[in-house]
Amino acid sequence: MTGLLFILGLVVVSGLVAYAGDHLGRRIGKAKMMIFGLRPKYTSILVAIITGMVITAITITTLAVSSESVRVMLFKMDKIRSDLATAQLDLEKATRDLDDAHKNLSDAQMQLDKYKADLEASDRDVILKQQLIDEKEGKLKTLGVQMSELSGQMTALNAELDSLQNRYDDVNSQLTEKTTLIANANMEIDNLESERGKLSKQIKELYSEIGNLKTERDKLQAERTDLIAKNEIMRTEGIYVYEGQILAEFVLDTNLSYEQIVDKIRKAEYDWDYVSPENVHSNQIAGLTVKQYSDVIDDISRFRARFGDQRAVIRLISAAHVFADETIPVELKAVRYLLVYKKGTVIGEKLFSTEDDRKDIRKGILEMLENLEQQALEKGMIFEGVRNAVTFDFAVVVETARKAAYYPNDFYIKLVAKKDIYNTDYLSLAPDLPEYDNMGLVIDEIEPETPWYEQQGG
Image (cartoon, rainbow, N blue to C red; front, side):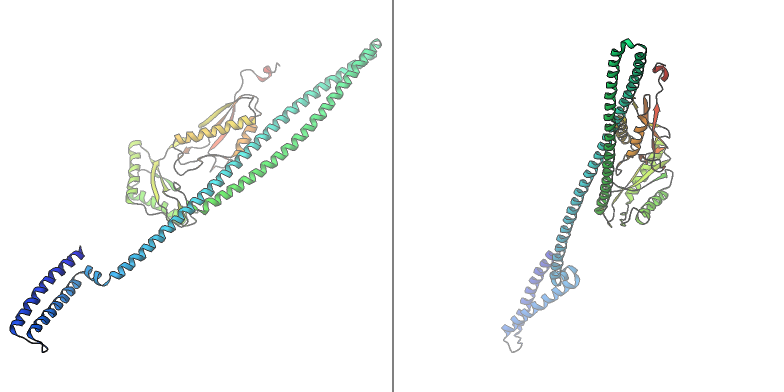
């Protein structure tokens, strides 16, 4: 628009200059004036030319003084073009750097997926080896029972041999027949002794095989630990903060004022930026907007007015994948603070039979834990940003299955809440550590209606 006005002004001024020069030239021509010895005709032409030049110079000077845009157009156009070319080069370089960062992110994600797949394969191998150990121990138990039965048979045959020997002394007339019976009994005893030797050899072989399987299991567990360590290294080398990761979470009273709620949220931001040991790369949180504060406070007021809640949960959640030392865009959310399980509540249970062996019991416990994952999702305990909200120590499952296998009657295995569990807690079955162990496995034996000694015919 400025350039158009400038051109229009020059056109108008040029017309005025032409008219003024022509008028002045005519007057000088009529007056017969002479300058520099020139004839009146050429003097009038010279005066007209000089007048046009002076008026044009004055017009351009006036426009340049009164308008910044005219000065830029006249004196700074080359510099503007140079700055525009430099900015275009910087933009192209930034675009190339962004493409390289996206490629590095994709490569890191592919490597992380590979380590996760290796870890899952290692876990499956450990479970298969443990199942094989259980099968060998069951076979060993069966062979022990067979050996006991053979020992009983050998004792009975020895008694029969003694009886035959006494009858030999009493009845000499049946000597030939009894001698044959004794020989047959001795032959059967020899066969039983040979079979017992074979069983003893099989037992030793089974013990040796169990030892080898335990060695392989320990090796697989060591490999699993190494994979976990590599996975952790890989996770922390690329992306430092993941999208959906909860950076801060705290519970507050719903009757606090606007200023008090804002102060607590800002304290949580400050703790993450400068206090939290997890924030080793100083990834600071981006500033929250007034709308984010208003939405959260409106939700807290709604919880108090509609449900009568006295407490609410505030969560600061990462809104994007972030590398080390980068600023973290966050989402601010308020959720209800709910008691999901009271202390002593049976969270899940499963009936087992005396015919179930360790493998069946262990499989049943793992099914209970898988069902608990879905149950926790339905109750709102698993939320965005939490991975493995239901966790367990496999050693606890194995030890519980071992104890339950010796129960003489049918029994329940129950998952019981060891403390009040809220929607901010994880469901964890682990060694007895108060800060992690929220659940416990309880074996509840079912007493039969008929006493045990009557079942045995006593």
